[in-house]
Image 1 (cartoon, rainbow, N blue to C red):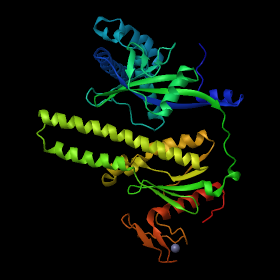
Image 2: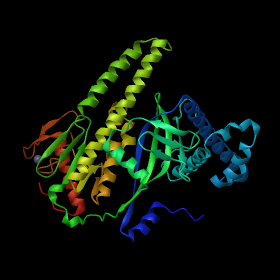
Image 3: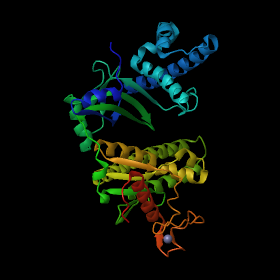
Image 4: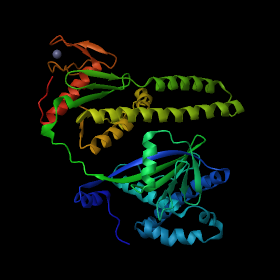
Length: 414
Ligand SMILES: [Zn+2]
């Protein structure tokens, strides 16, 4: 078997033929039978068991040998012998690829830790760990069967919820035609619902990055992300204020109401459990609505512009501030930026992220005077230097756009 090529290497090869890889995901709601549900739940348990086992074995091994226990060695010297033991026979019942991925997840956690991206890997507990496992595509063991079901290793055909969106229907037909390849499938349970998330790969025509000198100034926008107004978008002449969708606000109101009711119920009573379930269901629904909203806005921004300028968000740092933390994690900025980034890239367009210390909200966009005493609550203010009247968010969006243009070496058009 040849060495697995990285995406970068594959793209280098593909570029010679004017092509490139496009990776994306597809999430499908599924309805497993009782029997399939049982097996899915046992696989959650087995993958968690293997993750913990490799982690502890690796730690012990390091103490003894002063060497790293590689994934390959763990699989060969520990996993395979363990599976043949009577007491671990449950491991043979579940998808072997899922167990392999569990091992690889430990390795990945270490790699991210050494890169400083993560904390030291910790054991997964039954109570708190996410209910999910991932399996890999090998010899068509994962396949969509029209719009009705999906084939998953060991589970067989699992019924799918009706596929409504045009995008998802298109992707499924492309998978069936062999134009899109399935790389992985993650089976998960959230609240009482089951999902299959596919990681997909498609070969598309190579998109050359836009020549930055040909960028039209009107197609460069500065975007200020906020809590009150989700996004304030300025294109050099006009400003658009995008509020969080009404349907999300309504759901959030309903959630607050349900949470209030929950807090009044006696803990561990039957009514408490019922109410808790309702809250979890609605939280999931809101997460989907936010994702939907992030998709719509990022698609629109990427289609209508050539360069989008944003401030770098230090979400981790900000979330430490308890008062702001809930509002920020609810806002869904991170997801929005992730979507926007790849949607622009697919079209050869640019996302510019500027230094968050650049005082975008405290600088007068007209005369550049800095107003250090400006607080978060002042939505409107007057520049004491030039007399301009500013809307806080609009002024920030203008500044962000100007600063981005400066970085790109383009002329700012006020
Ligand atoms: Zn001013």
